[in-house]
Image (cartoon, rainbow, N blue to C red; front, side, top):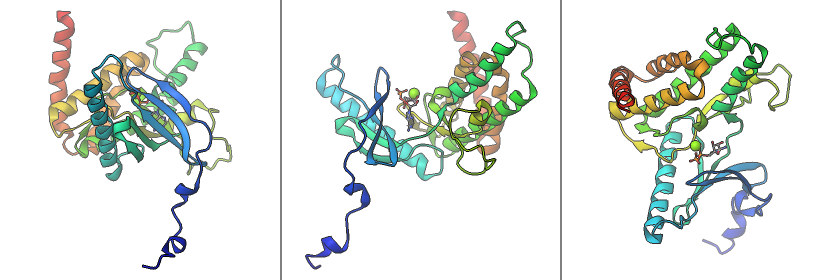
Length: 274
Ligand SMILES: Nc1ncnc2c1ncn2[C@@H]1O[C@H](COP(=O)(O)OP(=O)(O)O)[C@@H](O)[C@H]1O
Ligand SMILES: [Mg+2]
């Protein structure tokens, strides 16, 4: 109650840091931009997702849409994070201003990791049949990654969230800090195999919704299945492992996988029609 309370209880550290290194523009998509910043603390990199105003939209409608999307993305991330789904933590947001600040996830997108592994192999054996089986070490590494992807999606669906845009670009492989202990040290991009052993972290919840429906969940899986086949044709066969791990992680998976058959059928019909 004393007026000196302010001194007895210093502000949290975060309020004592000046904004440090200038922000780095990481990506610029059609809808938004992503910056890396240390605005919160010098040793805490953050990802700031910003949706700038769209000049081609009516300003009032645009402001309303932007606000709704930022707050919905943050809300879904928050829910996932609370329930232990591997996603970045939300640190701060200003939906009306079109931004959200979240945990920076170290590492690289799964797409890059997988293509590096498969790409390197292609160079070694350029003349060989593209359908040739992958070497066993490669196959084991990829299968193990597929299991972790399936488990992450299972955990996501368990919380009642569907992602809406599952691709290997929207999954990061975060290097594991503990447990390697082989003294090799550096976190860097030294070893493609090591990169693939990273923890799967789901990102980009801009299209995510809350849903418990088998249909929505099946479509989520189907989107990834299609994306996977076109991004990683050489590893397409391994997608079955994603579904296996999904089934082991998520109790209600069986009915989703039955639905997935329907969704695939519809997809085939649609592509036959043109
Ligand atoms: N929390 C994060 N930590 C590190 N990198 C991120 C993070 N969020 C996004 N990125 C990087 O920025 C890219 C674009 O972000 P994303 O959320 O996927 O937006 P978009 O809607 O433009 O696809 C991602 O593919 C990833 O490389
Ligand atoms: Mg994305």
